[in-house]
Image (cartoon, rainbow, N blue to C red; front, top):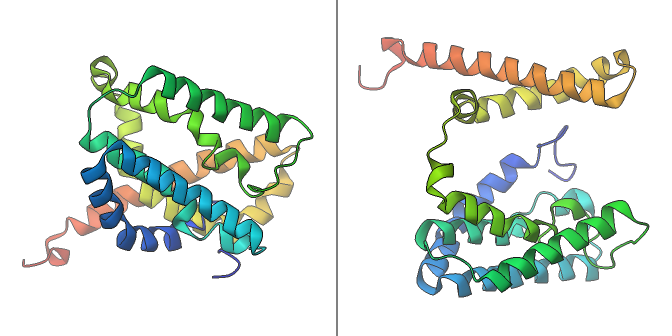
Length: 217
């Protein structure tokens, strides 16, 4: 648990376990207080960042706790229960803050004093995309767009994730040295995990469709 598993995305399982217990509370508060609930959980998210810095939390522990996702979860709940558009000045301010933080932490020599882990996906960095996400989800034209391939990968996403965990745990270290550069290794890894996870999804559906494996049959 302390090491966080093997490879990218290994924090997913412990975070999802926490999500199961915490989500009903977040949803209830956001449903009742709407945007004020989002602001509240955004503040809780920022408080977590401050506390982890004050107490010297290690990155291996930081990545396994769901509290760094409180703002995103609350905003997702708000989009589901409230169809009102965010005020333009709030959206503009969020975008500027998010873009500025990413530019400073990822493309300059500036080192943040509080949010020192996963800065590119922190609660400050994601502010640039929240208004854009809300605008796209509420757009009827965007909602009418269908991409069969992406939709299929979405349904198979958990199987792809499980295959990815096996890949990074058993094979990635042996295969990466075969490539001349990191981008090529990354492209191969993504393609291999998509194909392997997709095949796993198809096989699992075929097996679970056999009558002997169906509950109550």
